[in-house]
Length: 310
Image (cartoon, rainbow, N blue to C red; front, top):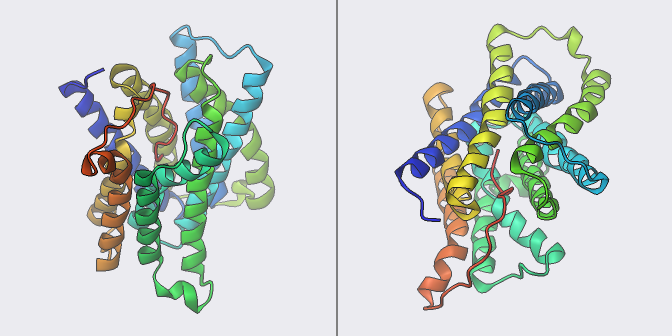
């Protein structure tokens, strides 16, 4: 599949939407507890995607084994990372979170090497992982050596979320019989059931006093970033393939930093921009390395991309 102009527009829109999610989370956690923010976006996203699946006449998975995998994906790919990101952004800028989340494909490379024998590490992948780790080290900075301050723990929480997404991607490889639309709804519905008790017991959200802006941010996270992002991704995969859709990983950190600068007045330091360059170079390395050394990479079959950032 050769992408056309409309495909590039969809890719740009996906980067804008998922990059904007870091701004929305930062706004929401200012007045709503972090797990409740995650619960709100999951419940709203699940309802929206379930309705979409129903309107489109789609089918829910019928195999019990697929549902076991979808429940696991709901927890590992939604409940855990959304909660970690929401808590982390209480203490660090949205732009820094976006840069850290760009490590998702690099985490996926390492996890897939262990659990997916048909995706071994190559020289280009190793170079990409090394550059990505260097970028994270630059972003966290020497303060990590001075003791685990709150900001450092928050950054590590966001990094841990990238590992969750990587594990989620490996699980999703074994759902070939499930349509991509059903994957989204099938993950989010059990995720909503799982996270609501955590929110109720740990944070007592009925005692919170959210601002109107925070409520709007949570609703936008559910409808636009979660449900809308899934649908954009699915359409892009169907039109141009999973490989092309994965290019959103280059756009999300850029837009994440940009939104934070425009609307929150964030001013990332020089080390943040250096880290961003290193992480983007790491994302590009697996694709560019074969060309640099004069090799032609083997053509891989397209799969639904689950290594996307948000």
